[in-house]
Amino acid sequence: MREEYGQRGFLEAKVTPVASYDDAVHTTSYGVSIVEGPVFHYGSMTISGMSLAGERMIREAWSIQPGNLFDKKVFEDFLYRLESHRETII
Image (tube, rainbow, N blue to C red):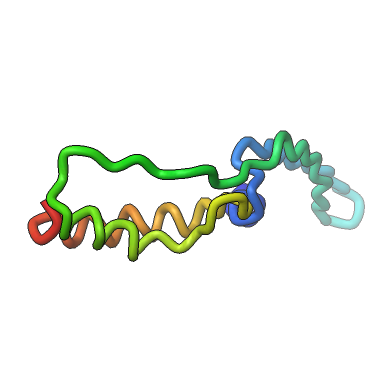
């Protein structure tokens, strides 16, 4: 659930499950408390110390536009792509 909230800009969401057991009928149920926290938006990116080609590659790989909700999954996928292409962008 935290990952889903992270894709919607809620990077500090707190999800607390609470189990409730009923021994008589052998069941368990869960209630969930969610505190979303603040919503985050993407502002800007500053890149320094790279070749112009490397900087261009990074900017082209980044898909979140300024002002849009920050998507944690997009960010993690972006980092993965950068890590897997490290030698070609530095």
